[in-house]
Image (cartoon, rainbow, N blue to C red; front, top):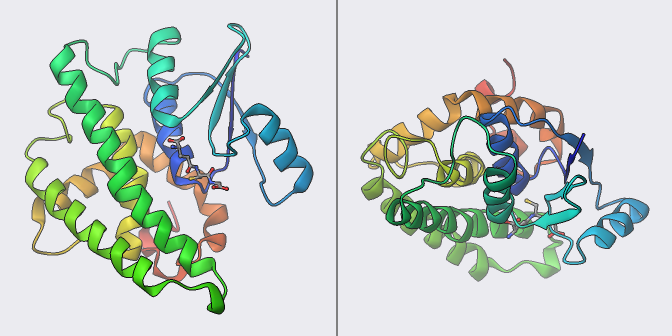
Length: 225
Ligand SMILES: N[C@@H](CCC(=O)N[C@@H](CS)C(=O)NCC(=O)O)C(=O)O
């Protein structure tokens, strides 16, 4: 097995790459990274000192590939499957990259901020930071509502941007429900959640949901098949 993915089944950025792998039935060996375990953390930092998951290791090519967007592009370049997650057309590719960055920076980042704040002790809380993160999510939701005109975020094809959108919106919607006033956002979210690669990724995350600080808000439909 050439491809090894170092990740955790609960981690939203890991979901982004798992969805890309499952979209193309790309064979890989999964390695669970437990950052709470000092030995596991030390091993992972050897691989990528930044300490952010996931990281892909391609033994055949001798390459260690961090950063989700780069991993998905690397897979397309060196281990392509039937579904191109980045379009060949240069302008269309720019749109996909833009919306990939959008979901990472303006949905995942504020969502993670709120989750991390929830895990902090009472004396470390930053209510202003949480309020800012909620405001950022509200802005992002309104922008997705405007963009979600077609089946997928950049048109008729499922792309890297949708791989980024699925975990970002899955967790964000638990923390900050998608407003009724944004029907296109809500319909897009439903299409994402119904995608086979996303369902598989969420099913694999299910045993770890008890570790998510907002676990009691996870909709019941995600807790069973
Ligand atoms: N920009 C990175 C972000 C990755 C990231 O934030 N991963 C989280 C898990 S969802 C992580 O490793 N967190 C561990 C930590 O910050 O200690 C990417 O796209 O790969």
